[in-house]
Image 1 (cartoon, rainbow, N blue to C red):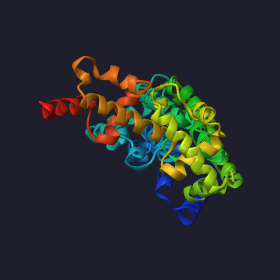
Image 2: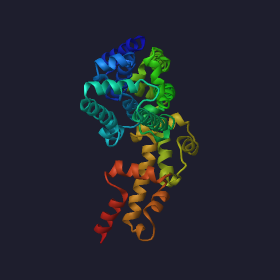
Image 3: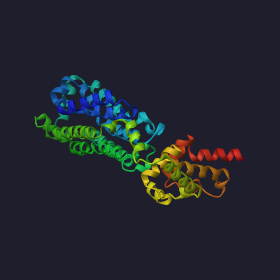
Amino acid sequence: MLGVAQSAVLLLLILTRHRNRRNLPLVLILFTLAARLGTIPLWNYETLIAHPWTMVVFSPIPFLGGPLVWWYARESTLVGQAAKPPLFPLHFAPYFIEAGAVGALILSLQPGEFQVLAAQIFSANPPWWIGARNLLKLVSGVVYTVLAARLAFRPERSSSVLMQDPQHRLWLKVVVLAPVGIWASFTMVALRPGLAEQVGEGAPLPYVIVSLAMMAVFYAVSFRIMITPEALSPRRVHERVRREPAVSREYLEEVAERVQHELKQGVYQDPGLSLSTLAKRVGAHPNHLSLAINDVFGESVPSLLNRYRLQHFVSEIEQGALEQRAILEVAFDAGFPSKSTFNRVFKQCYGTAPSQYAAEAAEDTA
């Protein structure tokens, strides 16, 4: 109940002081964690017999945690439509699939049959599907955590100016890594369904461990908010990034001119080019370079490089490069480091696959 109370305070804080589209996934993360934590004491034989719907509504909640963390990581690192996960509803479909399947199962059973099922769930040998669904929840959480961590720990994949702020990056890492403790403790329960028998015997130690892990997440997020409350206000982070470091507008324009010169020389064709290496080429501090590109060009460093790479690619295929070379060969020559990056950036910009664009370009020239 302490964890539930903690989450309620955080929800009120965000909803009243930090209303922002980017914070919506965080609100939902706290809400689902609080709902799951608050209903763990209900997970026993007596409650299940009296209120079967609790199994339908609350048991699938872990399927929501991973997608929400990934969604929040995207909102914190990407801009525009790219921030919303592709095929958005499908990422949350497992919750509704399990809820619907369990609900249909319960409705198909007679009262006496449901009592037998409930007894089996809290036995040393529960039905096989109990362990299977727990394993699916675990795999889902781990996969989405990895996806979120790739964004949080690789700022070069970001198109948001917010990721230039060290405090914002640290905040995002806290949000992404905090649930790892929950998944680690959940593993013990997921891989050993027979532990449910301990709950039936009045010794819910495994679930106490999971509950403590959830409470730790609430407190980790709370203390981080106390240290940097502006983490929930993207506008304030953006303003701080623009204030630091304090350099003149003339200097920023000078750095931007050096960048423009390097781009004309084709520096973007180096797939290993990063913020630090580009900063060395133009003789500027990485923070100054990033600030200059954002102020003068109005975009992040990765976005600027990818824009030039796309222009290079499109120019090449319009000149008939595909008559002698494959699409990926032209893309790699333009500086894209991988096929996945090329496809993702191209589709975000042109709204279609590179192969389809190339085919339409070939028809137009014909």
